[in-house]
Length: 85
Image (tube, rainbow, N blue to C red):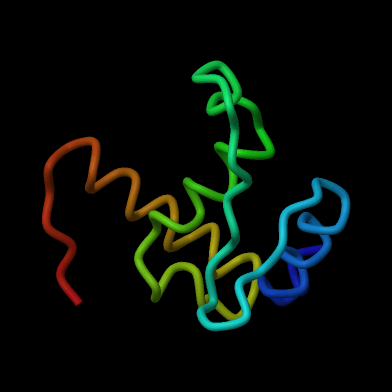
């Protein structure tokens, strides 16, 4: 599955979890909830977190690249480091 392109993975996730891609942007639509507790549900939290990632990570061409960039991003965010490009 490491050769799967990321947008394909996101579409597959959106079909099984009833989350849609926005037509205007390359972001996931976050479902609305009536209760504060609903914001912690996977179907709400997952698209919100994916939308919070920098565009260069979200637009990775392969799953392996996505994982590599995500790991670097989270490491730098946790330790307060600046990633040199």
